Image (cartoon, rainbow, N blue to C red; front, side, top):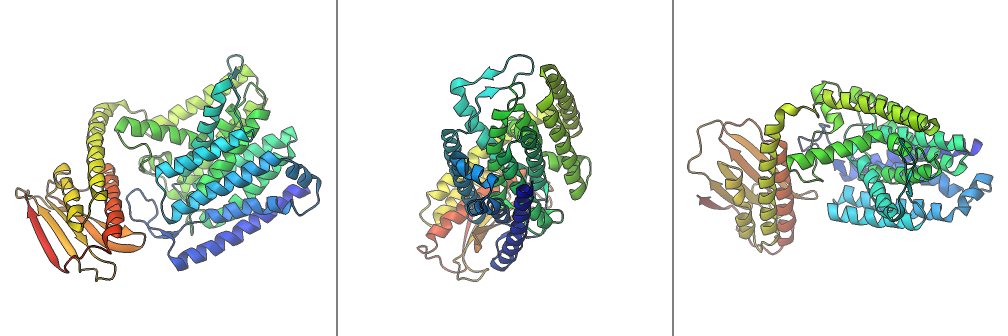
Length: 495
């Protein structure tokens, strides 16, 4: 127990110091998460990269075991596959998250790296080989062990990433998962898993000092994906050492909230015709705030309570027989159904509207794909504008304007392209402006105007426009050194 306490204390202190230092450097260097979208809950720019504190705090006491002569250290050092899996895999996932926080990583890159890490874990012996069946004999997976293990690792990594939407939420959810695995490992006498969990618990708490509402720093993808990776790996070890009646059910229940939120997001986006990896404001924490009118902090505390329920259920499943496990799962299922009904996920009165939204979103996605493809193929500013112009008809705009400039020019300088609809209505105008930025360099702006009486654009249109603006910024950044646009030149193009 002394080793556990020392490991916890070291990880806590390292995480505290690292998170504080990263916060100060992020403020000085402008590494901030901007509140520039309606799906953002925070209303001010907040430093990111706080996940560095979690990563450093977790690894610090484990690295110390290589230098300190102790019984626990000897056991840890002797577990080569465990060390390689956690250290190498964790470092790769943390590096991926760090790159995503700074530069932005596409879905293909993220999933390619996560898939490679998951395959590496499987090769090192992190395998799900048995599925629980509370109503009968367990199911041996055989050849299905590999795909299920990969899906589990990649799924948990992204589940923690998706749940990271409120101050202190992802860290708190992870802490409850860590607590569950620590208690299970302690009851089994698994010293190494206990050590890993106390190290991660200390790192999470050290970070939460700065992240609980109101947060002064966010963990970013560096922290959320790393937490997901460690919990996924440890969950596999937990399931392999649990009774066969509950194999994998315990870790699934321990991570019940992020898994449930992820499954709901997948179903929701599929039904509404949204890209599977697009951001939205319909997660469980968003709906608690909007439908039950809960404050930011109260919402997090309510979800902590839900995590406590999942934690207690997971621990109970460890001791339950098949019948008791079935009853426990049925009870939790009832609680989940009541919650989903309260949050409007089971409201069947809007099926027609869902169908219309899906049809509209599929058209919108097709429009965005064609526009962004044309933008990336553009060889000049004029061709970039030609690529963007279909937005005018596709979004029923009254006016569309694209302003582009070189980085060294004044904000009001550059070239302006404009298109106006000759039959624009007389309604009050709704104007939306998106900055065209490459990292922190402002390259122009995209301005859209509607005169059809609408008061705001919906989230799907906003997300689509952000994708277009990002594509324009990327291409203009490539062309800016070659394009010789005349300052203050205006080209008016009317339909």
